[in-house]
Every structure is written in C-alpha cells, then in structure tokens.
Amino acid sequence: MGWWQISADTLAGSRFVVSPLAETVASLSTLERAVAAHPRERAWLERWLPAYRRLQGEDPLSARIIRAALTPRWSADFLTPAPVPPPAGQPPDTFAQELARVRATPPDVARADIVESLRGPLPAALDRDDLARRSADVLEWVWTRTVEPEWPARRRVLEADVIARAAQLSRGGWAQAFDGMRSGMRWLGESRLQINTYDNPPRELDGAQLVFTPVTADVGWVCWDIPHRYGVVYPCSGALADTGRAPVPQALGTLIGPARAGVLVLLATPLSTTQLTALTGQGLGSVGRHLRVLLDAGLVRRRRDGRSVLYVRNEAGDGLVRAAG
Image (cartoon, rainbow, N blue to C red; front, side, top):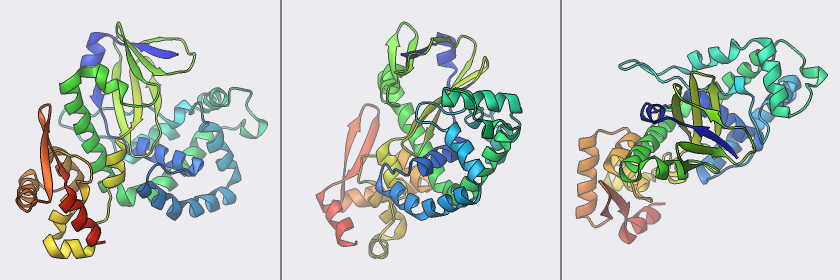
C-alpha cells in the first residue's frame, strides 16, 4: 500500500484549500470517463459531453495527450499540481494563476510524467515539447465553458464540505476524518497515513506542507511539489455535491419565498446553519430566521450531532417539496 509518514508539526499545520484548477481537472476526468455520480452531475454531463467529444474530434492530438495523462491508475503530475494555500489575509489563487503553473512545466518534465502515467515507454506521437501547453488549453476550455459559469455555486458546496470536515475533526480527530475522506485512505497509526492501496514506497513528509482539497466530482488523487508540499484531492460529500445545486420549484418559491424555499430544498439531508450559509450564500442571520419559520411551520426537525445542530426536512416538508414539483 502507499502511505505517508506525517510528523505532528506537519499535521498541525495542514490546511484545507478550495482550488478552481482541481475542480476543473475533476470535471475533465468526468468528461473523460463519461460517468456521473449523482443526478446533478448527470445533467451537467449530458449538457457538455457532446461539445467535449467535438473538441476531441477537432484536436485528436490533444485528446490523446489528455487520455495519456489521466489514466485510471495515475494522473500526470504536471496536470495536477498541489494547490498552494494563500498567505493569511490574502485571496486564494485564481484559475489563471494555477493554470500558469501547468503551462510553465518544462517539456522534459511533462514527458517524464506521461511515461509515469502510462507505465510504459512514451509513444512517438507524444514525444513533443508542447504536452503541457496543449493540456492547459484543454483545461482552459473545460473551465471557461463548463465550470466557471457555475463556479460560485460549486465553491459554496466545496466550502460547505470544508466546514463539515472541520466539525468532524472537532468530534473525532484526524483518524475519523481521514477514514471517510476518499476510497483507500485511512489512518494507520504511528503517524502513518495510507493514501491508496497501491504498492508504492512510503514518503516522509516531515517539514512539508499538507493540503486537502475537495472537488464536487466523484474522483480523487494525491499530488505534490516535493519536498515542499503534498496534497490530497478528495470528493466532497455526495449529499452536498448533489443537493448543493438543486433547483427550487417555482411554485414553492412563490408560496414561501425563494430564499426560504432554497433552504427547505437543501434540507433533504441533515445540514448545519453554517453549511446552509455556505451553500446558499445567504447571511447567517437570514438562514437562522428561515429555519425558525420552517421549524414553527412543522416542516423541518433538528437534532444535535456532537457540537453541531443539524436540520433536516420531516415528512411534511418532503410532501410540500414533492407537491411543488
């Protein structure tokens, strides 16, 4: 199995980072696999897969590079750089800043990464100096067409997942958070983190920065900028990924107001006020008022989970959402 030896200082300094580039790579992987994990992703895939197939047909060389870089077992390192946490008080990197790191990959490094992902010799057609540039062009297409228009909603879902992970950490510690983060990943004890089930040599992370990055697609990978930074990209909660962009029935919005209806629709799964604030983009006070009205109307119920209070629709709330379409 592949595992990392993580010092206490590295673990204490670890960070969660939301990355537009990681979300775009995850979306590209979804387009490549043509498989959706939930209804919202299926609708997105049905909308954009034909256009992506046309792009592949128009530029078969770039399509071959992407297929070689995103194999089922391994992703080329230059395509998946470890996200860089922003300094305190500074905004996170933009997609353009992250993409610039992909474009700046030296040709010999990009070729070596493709060899690693293919687990074999580099095909003659890919023995080129523009592997990183062509890959970055495809990523830019995916971002501009399919991700950027809905990035504010996706970012709220990802931020809600980070909030949920932080709450999980406060209740069960890192061992519990790691075990549920992604398939094949678990805390082994003795400062060892299993990152996958592959037979890879262990890595020592002492003195390195460790970052965790959620994506809305049902994919994940590890990444690094050795020896400075190591990252784990993991799929955010399926419930959040699916319901975070759930449409609000027009009739329900007319009946109880669109903002309150949006809260009620999201409560198909238990969520805290902090998660609802991140998902809806509404203020904490507004979300609290909506929850009080919904509780008084007998449409939701609440329960305590550790230090958090979670809200979820009851049968009356489910019936109202179904009746409204």
